[in-house]
Image (cartoon, rainbow, N blue to C red; front, side, top):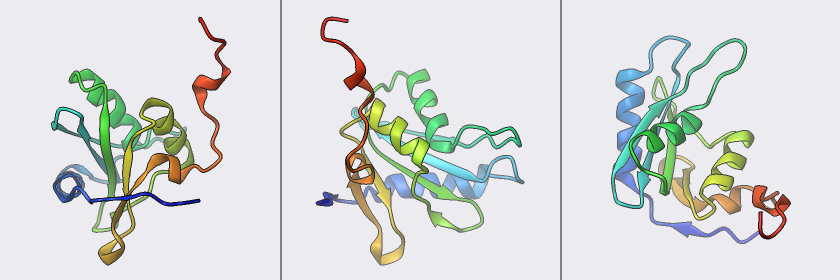
Length: 137
């Protein structure tokens, strides 16, 4: 696997951190995410935890972006509450992000190791949802 490293969008990291500091409260909302659309707009979201499961902040962000007319995300980052910093996406989120935005960059790591990598690097040898379709469908 050759990791493609891109410049870190520090404004995006700070947007997610600000939401984590100010909007994540209690056990229901513990993660914040921020994404930058192709047009430069930033959209933010928080997770919706529930004991039966619930969407991660990254998945809430996909819906929030679409609700604001942002259908192409370039970069995304998730930040934990209580100063936990950048948190990498879970496996489900990695697959969904790849399916929706195959050219997406994802900010991972922390401190001096903070970096932006291609979502494809987070899922090597991955299943591509569109591959199951027959041409012409």
